[in-house]
Image (cartoon, rainbow, N blue to C red; front, top):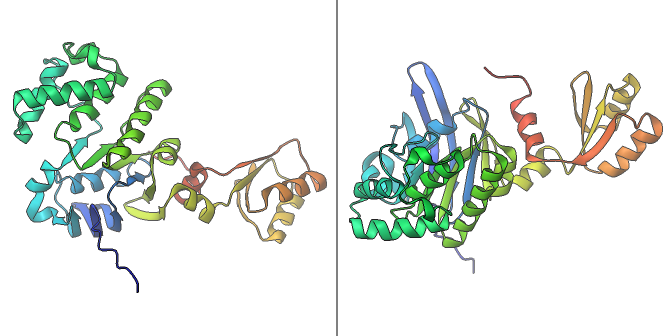
Length: 309
């Protein structure tokens, strides 16, 4: 006898659309996010990532389609939904005139959390994000990395079931990014569902269990980082600088997937090591490299390599 999975997704998006006048920012997208999953929306600037999550946390009304969070319709139950989520926007929304602790206390009032409870939770969160020594400092005294950790910590004050992060590490130095990644990774053990947007490939590969790749308001692909790599590029990449015409012809004859950029030939090879040795033996090895495929290769293959304004 088969067992039917009745678990309801935390987020369910179906044929979602967002338009601003004649411009369509989100164009008929569908996906779902299960409980406890770290889900990413990956895409270049202007892909529709922020427009999508703003509809999910009730900041921007949807133009068309269906959107539910915790099984509740965002169009009629936004107030209830907002009480159960935490949101970290791209911009720094902290009050610079207040101390770190005061920012927690004021923000907690939006969730009807009393001052005593707010201070207790704030102290716990500050310790978790290594900011406990800064509770009486003003926001203007904090570094960029501290500010981002503080914004995320504040978003957890209401003990949300869903945490939404809009490009959480943009502008941070590598050390601060990695510190923040470690904290976000450990939140999964607490059962918190995380939805994040990013245009950093390494961030998506490390943090996301599942993701969608968006461009120009549409979803181009969705799955786990590794499944997307397997589907769109294969496990290995061969790059040849200034490829010879006979190498191009040889590669085409082999029927392998490839991108010819003129000055560079990118070959997506399943049997990469064998094909690489064959190329080196028959053609050249000075300008030929073999490497593992990454999510960035998938991203560039799907969204293109041209510069965007």
